[in-house]
Image (cartoon, rainbow, N blue to C red):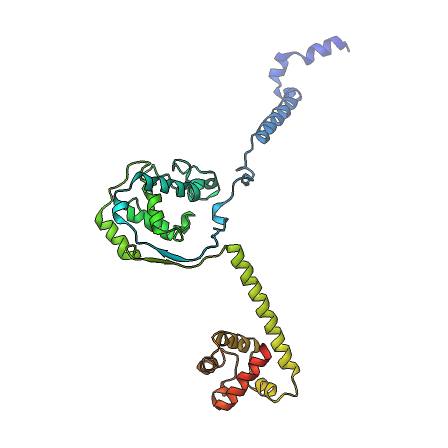
Length: 309
């Protein structure tokens, strides 16, 4: 066979068109290269959303613990509704400072709903420049309700811990961003009737969340240790007449311990006895304790006191 003739036959494109299956040997490598190039392009352009992750610098604000300052409680003056209806520039500036501290991370520098923390929320934060889609509404009483109660389903936290006057300052600043409905006396009267804003407000003492958690954990640990000590003492006090008496009248030692601790917090044995007699089973005792004499109750209470301390 003539090799030159065979070579000419292989590159005879007219023959290839008559029998396209022979083109597969040429096209398949090109197809693989195309798929590889497209794959590399796709991987190079994947975003955080594609990987279902969020940037390390952005926290999901719905998972944030709102920290509270350690401060002594006090009394706040009534809200000045004249200032709310006609805010001064200094009042508005104060509102902007509070807005920057508490709201800007989600709602953005200019209230466009484009803050970095808002990216992680399932529902985009409110764009104050838009008049559409407000859950509670755009009137001043409706905006105050939002700050007072929050909107859980939208990821909007409540800011009731901020003094009412300061919340009105925030609203006054937001109202400068675009055109809002006019503030009316009826709206302010409605707010006052609902939240008693024209009265003196008493603020309780507050401690940071972490400190409160540590104190609760410490208290729970101490209480748990006392409970174990009490049960161990009663079970081991086999020769004590009152220990045997207690065992004969108890269903649940843990409930007895808790009933005593709650009553003894007020140093009130009569309260303890009255609570037990109201619902003995719930307090950990057998119903028959309703038949005990005052003297028996006194001895029983004294024994509990000596066993738990």
